[in-house]
Length: 446
Image (cartoon, rainbow, N blue to C red):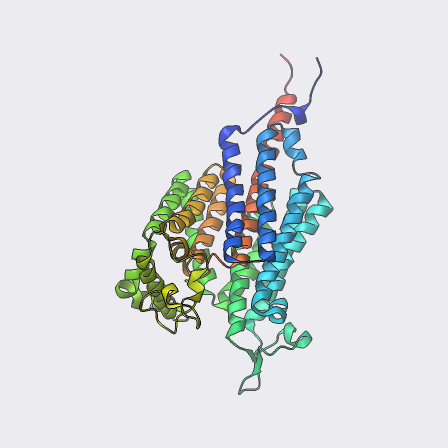
């Protein structure tokens, strides 16, 4: 009888494993597709490309149960498709920044978006997706991003490489003679900090799993102080929420995952009520706890948008409506009654924006997407769950307090994190399956 060998030993994760990957890729695909609703033009091209890639990956995983075929799924042409789409993600992120201010975005935060993506993609093409080399390239990219971040956080008042090579109207000279940036700089820097803080989770696990503990320690030693120096409330809150979720998963296992999924659904369902009463009940405490900054303004914005939801709670005000309520030239019937003239920002809250734009259906859709991702995490290999749930909790926290769904750079960032975790899950599954098959093959025959 022909010996098929360990690589052709037929094994499968079963329906649960297939469902886990399908849900994870749904999270990867649906978020960018939502980007088409909230951004137009070339942003939608990258979003659709990522969704198509997700569908290919799900179909491939479900139809190829053997270890050999699982390995083939990440070799050409599939690997080329996956990494090409990640390049589209990089393009979408850069484009999202350019939409605000091209030269400035190119100088600042866009470099931080691109550096990890380019390093990871280069590592995949050069190493054939070898996990050890991928960990090294991920470490190199994120460490470089963190160093840039630390240098920018220290700020132009001291030294900034960007001032040497670029000149831009956003720069201004302070009364003390030091070069300083206007508020626009802080907005872009905040996005860079959030990017680094979210990507710490998959890259950190990649280093830990491959035994690169010294590299992980060095990365954290550079990245965490850089995040702290930036005073980004969104990133710090996200890291705190992610750390709590990861620790809870280590202690109680899947219960923490299911608990987060339930909490997110409750929050999504009750978001209008919560953010309507929050300023009056706990406004002073929240502003004090956040250390001032934009917390007070954020509470006013949330309350105004929560009030607008109650005027059209079923179908909402229409896609992307929230960004135009206070702008000149908008017909009165498209603006909530009593809307403050000074407020025309987006809701700064993904859950509220779902309600504002699409009513009860949008609110529940946002919650369902996060909850589905949490349920997919519950079915990942056990070693991967704490960091995966930490990343998801951090993303949900940032979405809750800062960035709206229409910001495609944020959508693509979460999609990239999800893609890395799915790749890690398949890598771990393959490694375990090979080890099990080899151990059985080495046993003496009876």
